[in-house]
Each structure stands twice: as structure tokens, then as C-alpha cells.
Length: 262
Image (cartoon, rainbow, N blue to C red; front, side, top):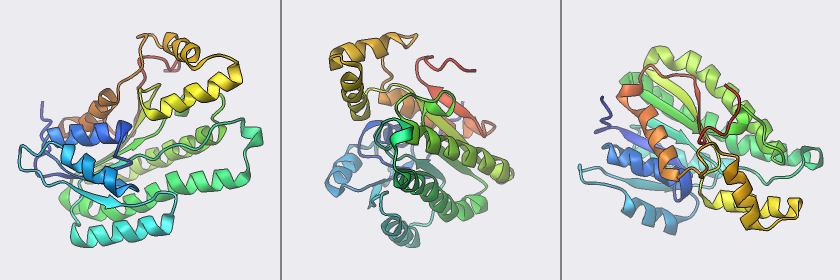
């Protein structure tokens, strides 16, 4: 099986912790040069230093805030003028605050749409010309299992994640002939800081302790455990490998089997 990414360069968004950092680690372990993108420069420095460079990889970082589209455009534009070679793009951005969708302000939808779909569109348009010239490209979007099964209490996220999934499927139809694949990875309950926030939110709404909420959610997973970020990162890295060249336009849950739809 050809998993070798030596000589390939990956841009990984939201990559100083959790699934983003795990994906970056896996890509580096397969030989890729990895550029991390996040808003905290101190964390970026630490994350870059943690990446495998045993094969001579060159790792970099870009400071960019996904809540500020103009700033993101400037930061990525400056980076690509110096380092235009991008074979792999991992779109990954934290989700919005939870709550009933009927109570969500319309501005929340606009802001979340820009952070996710608009930023993703800009990044794809920025890197696809090089991918086309190379005849090789991998675009992986970290979304959510809500694409298949909406999650109660995450109305804004459910809405925008669904839009991103449809956008990605459309892209996969347009870009496949150029050797570029577009896929979505759908994390389930993953052992990250984000999950701890879910415990807190549901403990308040359910009138239970966070420990009770955690156990109830754990029991809802057929494997009876939360997914580790490294497991999701491994799925991302495989989709970026030469071995996955014919996997295109899919939604891949990494959730221990919790999603009940096919």
C-alpha cells in the first residue's frame, strides 16, 4: 500500500490541538512537509517543533484567525507567494456555540457560514491551480457526523456543516479529472477540549453532573469509548495518500459506529 507523502506539502488548518494537530502529526509521519495554520503563534511554534522531521521534512506555520476573513486572505496570500507548492489542504475550523436553533441570531449563521464555507472556498481557490499542474491534490474537510444525523442543541452548526458537505461533494465532481480528490471526515464524540464543552453544556440542560453526561454519551457509542484524535488524524492522512486516489466525494464518519444512518 502506497502511503508515501514524501515531497508533498500539506496545509492544515486549526492545527495546534485536537484533530487538526493529530492530522498534521500523521501527515508528517508519512513524509509530508506540513504548514500549520492557527491564530496563536506560541502554540504554533510548539506544534511545529513536535512534528516528525526524520525524513528531512520542512515544517512551517502561518498565523491566521478564521474569524477574520480579510486577515486570513492576507496571511495565506503572503504565504503562497513565498511557498506556492501545496498538494494537500485540510480544512478544519472550530464549530459555533450550541443552543436551540430557534434562538440563534441570524448573525450567527452569517458568521459561521463565513468561517467555514467562505474560508474553505477561498483556500481551495488559492491552492487548486498548483494541484492541477501537479496532477495530484487532496482536499479533506473536517466536518461532523451531523451531516448524516443532526445533533440536538447544535442547530447553527448542523446547518452550516451540511452546506459545507454539499459544497465539497460538488467540488469532488469538478476536480476529480485533475487527480484532485475532495472528501469529508465526520468526527463523532472525540476526546478533545471541544467534547469537554459538550459535557458542560449538556450537564446544565440535563440537570446532571458532567461525569454522568460523559458516561451517558460513552454508552451511546457501540465501541463504548470516545474516539481518540489520533484515530481521526489517521483517517485524514489515509485519504491524502496515493493509496486513496479513487476515494472521492465521500463522507467518512470516525465515530465508533454511533451514527445510525448508512
